Image (cartoon, rainbow, N blue to C red):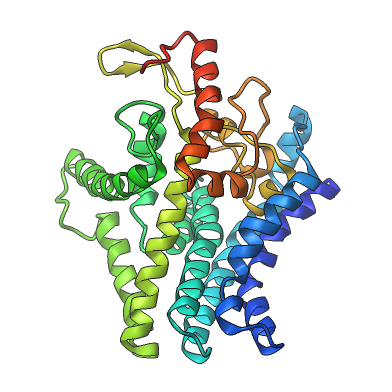
Length: 361
């Protein structure tokens, strides 16, 4: 390994943000301010550090990549996220009832937990569900069920990766579409698509969709078990917390999807047929720090080109559409549609023109 590979330990430091918030409150920080501390770190401190740390556009040579791909270190990190996230989720649920909070403080704590769920549950799950091993995919399913977005396990692999950068993809934002229009559309259609794709798979295999072989039924049942645990442990308030943090985690994911694919299109070569997916059909960012924190998710262009390639060997492509900053910065920018369009629309137009795609589409 290189020294830079140690950076992939940093997601576990993010898991300490709720503890940091509670310690700060105990040290005298007003409780209603302290609950927002994780969000301040993620969306104020992290973007500044991202700029200071700069970008890492280097790639491993083929021999080094093959060796690194087999090292257990990288696989163990993504698997260890599961107990880490479950501890964070349980701790956050418990402390919500212990801290002296009003409505503003409660909102800050729940939103902080939800956003952390996007980082610590959904993002590692995204890495795991693409792998061929049953165990890794199962861990990915558990992580997704913990935030109630288990349909992502099916729709993302069998839907999004097939239809990305086409009008058929619910996770590819259209040019000019605001994040506030995109996210509800993506949440609704992606859940519906997951049920449809799983039912289609079972019918093609000659089996009933209403059976235990239906992954959506299985993972929905597991989600209900988790919901019951939180209800029995912390009552109706704990169950409500579990539901809302999951919705916020899923919302955070779809905001990231908005950033990753905004305005990009694959060329249509025949009715309902499009060119093959390559590294030209997703936005790329090689910011060093945020890629450590996100298991190289920002090298998203290469991920779509080679979906099963493990995060530690994802490549930077100079000719991929490039974001002007890391995801933390772009997340905030996406919430401000006029500023987002000012920054991103000209980049979309240039990316389309470079590939001979009409800017009017």
